[in-house]
Image 1: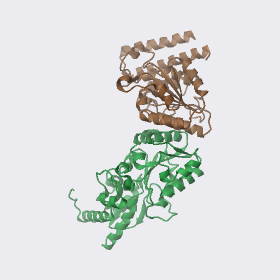
Image 2: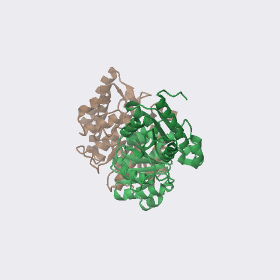
Image 3: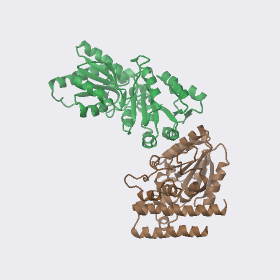
Image 4: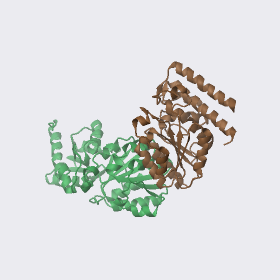
Length: 315
Length: 282
């Protein structure tokens, strides 16, 4: 994914003279240092000062430039939240923020660097857009579209290569979820690295004669209410899967969407009330339960609730 | 500065004070201390220093002003109205529901306001971003930034200062309203006090310290700054919080005041007389 960022951001900048790239001493972590070095009038290293970087981006934006800023997800969200909220959101200065290494993708950098709440924070900003990237094809398509959007636009993306889900020329529409697999018994709604887990879970469920739909809700905000409602009606139950805290992320977004238009049983595979910690991705998947096995279990749970027509017991 | 300009700017400053206080009289309360302390600076900026066109507030190559101490908006609104950016009667709508003149500066609501501010520290970075943008665009304009001395406690200010020195933003002129007070009292009772000009100089700024209620000194400092290349500029203004209304100057906690009916009458009379007196001198 790092390679995609380092290829596509320069392409965007070279096609639009108003695009500028800002980073906070993590340019080389996404491979942008070479292009930045060659284009000192288009790329600015703001040093280890994220709040100032966002403010500078706001000033550039106010004068008609189109800033794309990057930092690790924790610094791109929590560290400068008030600056993003006020200097960009409230002040009407559009910005694209790339928060890299979401959730357990922070791996060896550990808990201090593990954003499990960035989508929740950015979703709170009025008129914001929050996208979580699933694979390289999506990153290319989304990045290209983002620069001309109003408001605060946040992209969650890991630096390491993700499993390929889409064909290279697949076109994505921000705000429209992708149906990866149709199904009639349960809808699994995933984002980011959990889309692949959702696909694995659907295979396991198929072996047990359960026909699961798999939906990639890559635009976490604005959420695709229409598609969610369609699949909630069709399947009667939903499981969400996200590499994020359960509060405020995909589970919340899906519940908020369906509660008013098509209430069905929903369970969420997510990090639950925990801080991050260090480890490789496999360890962290197990540690926080971000697995296809848990998706399968939750699918059976919500199907049981649907079939029995009763509320599940608490806990 | 010739004597006519000086007298004209002093009249303008007196009018800004009068109109600012009339806004607070109409509302009954407000951030009076820090509004009055920058009235002379605003008179110099809008009356002479800034390259602006009130009929075209979005003219790209205009000089821009970021008032990072956004709670001083009422003084800026007075200056803007007097310059014809919007009708004078808007000043009676300060802080009312649906107003174009909110307590803190808002670029989306008020013609002539270049940045949305109020969360201290954030205006500094925005001003630096604007200065960088206009430098990239090849404009020969200046970006003026007003920060409070209390506001310097926000670390973001110094992040912005470092960046602007690193990028040699010579089109950036920062004013520090050094009125020695913050909301809860005197700065030296709350936070460690440092030598503000020395600090800016240490961060690579061209730095001056002048009397902040002397329009001539302020203007000369701006002219001096423009002669210095390859560095951003800091002009520290020695000011008095509440300047122009002795009762406010002498009030310890004068950041925001609720006005009594008696004060409204007295201050209106005082500031009206101050304008008349300056006009007579002119």
